[in-house]
Image (cartoon, rainbow, N blue to C red; front, side, top):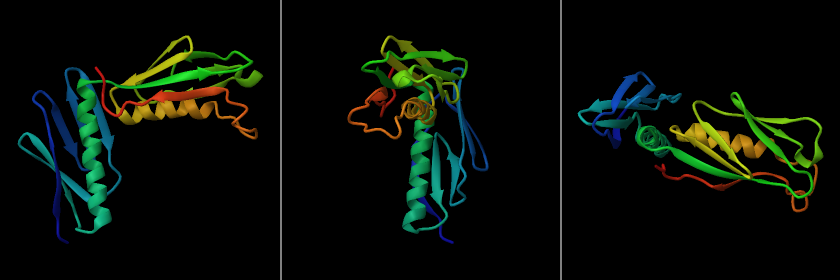
Length: 181
């Protein structure tokens, strides 16, 4: 099987990288991001101040998977310096919704006059701030912050009704493609 060097990811000074098999942990200045990669179609190696990602085959789908792994590694390293931020907005027309953070989940009460609260899980070490109708989801791991924002949006999804008329819910208004300071 021919191996192919797919990508090189630069590691800034002060960032410690720990690799064991398909587990990768990066840490710097008290912050830490970790990820387990399930695929076995790639290998990553530490080479001086960078991480090399090698695909085990030259097939296009295997090389694409190795490129995705390299992007995940870049996101893990970037999250150590800057937080990823998602902004959401609470929208309601008739019944005022109450949104509150309780432990490791967000509780949404009175969605379209509903009797029972809905819950959205907060993933990992993500922080959720609620300021009136605005919700700010902030964290150092891009996947955890994105999934938490998606959980909030999905928890308020209206089923069995015309979404053009019943527009109550929580919606993502801005995504953080890049980390913000």
